[in-house]
Amino acid sequence: MSRLEIRELEAFLVLAEELHFGRAGERLYVSQSRISQLLRSLEGRIGAPLVERTSRRVALTPLGESFLSSLRPAYESLRATVDEARAAARGLDGVLRIGFQGTVDDGLARAIELFGARYPRCALEVAEIALSDPFGPVRRGEVDCAVVLLPVAEDDLVLGPVFSRQPQTLALPARHPLAGRESVSAEELAGCRLIGMDGSAPEYWRLAQAPRETPAGLPVPAGPLVNTLQEGLSLTAADRGAMLLCRSTAAYHSQRGSLAFVPVEGLPDSLLGLVLRRGNGTPQAQAFARAVGETLTQETT
Image (cartoon, rainbow, N blue to C red; front, side, top):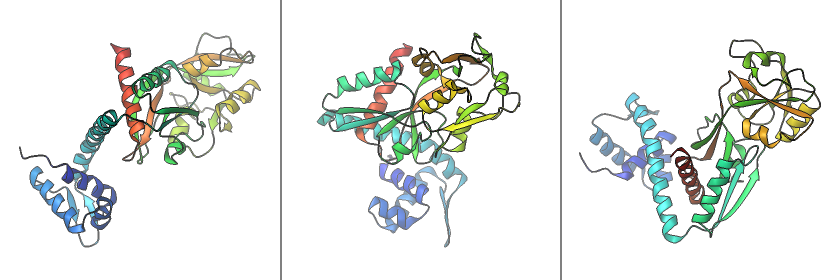
């Protein structure tokens, strides 16, 4: 096997994003002809074209698409490993800003503790982010990474460790007919107005948090739209609707006498994961992602 050239892989990854040889060269600070040379060399190693070039357009071949889907996560993992080693060698400092939705559960708290012990020179800032804008704070650079409810399917973001899988819980007014139940079925959501998320969150994400139909296809009435968890819980207490929450968030608010929290059977589990910017995540965020991964490994061994 011929020697692997990282520069060839970088050229291909950037070209796959830009689909333009000139812009790819600008991003890598090389000439357009150098990008072509690197691509030809990579295609020679593989033995087939990865890119179709005409006078009007650049497009990936089917093999190029398949190669890209496998290469991108492997390359990002390699770069994260190098960044982590570089940070450890010089002593990571600066500030790590972590955003989170809902509450800081035990898994997140342990990861924060591990990161703080490993990098004492790096200051930690933890901030709650709005339910209605799960990805915006990471995109705008307000936080370096964020622990958010899944799913995430954003091209400019990358999903790191997924470290909380919990049954979903229905928040109800304490006087609601279902409030005294040990559990409710997913089909019974058809009798509840589900409070949804307002704001800039993509529709696929909002539907995951407040589905419009049950697994059997029964319509679920839509309740008010909110921006924050507190808004949603306040409207729930005022009998304006019900709200789906992960179990840890429900447990944190279980002392509120105006609310009841009932497990829901028949829905997919609620998932929390760490989200970072694709391609330009900070060394602090990469190091924290690794700390989360190690925390998860310790929990399962």
